[in-house]
Length: 203
Ligand code: GTP
Ligand code: MG
Image (cartoon, rainbow, N blue to C red):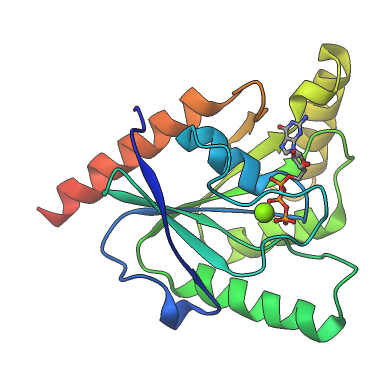
């Protein structure tokens, strides 16, 4: 699938204020600074669309982008960012959980892990939560351009081993790099297929 045009729709502090759930939607989530906003920009070929930053905690609301007038991409705030207050973290968590559990047009959530970082408990807990609630997700291992092929294979294996401790079946996983556009075709093809089934079901 090719993307022609993506526009920012709105930033919402809670589910009730999100755009009407009339189009298929895909969310991107992961710890702060993992590369969610950069990945969204890579997918839609627009560097400045989702705001990126070297400083963690940049994205603080539920941000909707409309792609080719037919589907939504959603940039979510990072979870577990230590430098915000506990009450702010709780507010984020309530917002994210409310959104993930109740957004009826949400087809799949892409959960991002930094491939250079060893598997973190907070990430394992988060996919555990999605699994428990029966919410479909894909894992994306980001920033693969920052390490060698050897280290990359080792890291993918470490993630697979860690995940296998809790999961009978391995959740689907892609390696990505935003500057090198790795993973783009695979992700857009999936979204294209899901969009087709969403529209067929509505007919
Ligand atoms: P928050 O909104 O703060 O939660 O962060 P985020 O997950 O949206 O991360 P963002 O896309 O802002 O990227 C954080 C930093 O990592 C920026 O400096 C990006 O340029 C850099 N970055 C993101 N993805 C990649 C990647 O695939 N490769 C490299 N080399 N750098 C990346
Ligand atoms: Mg961001």
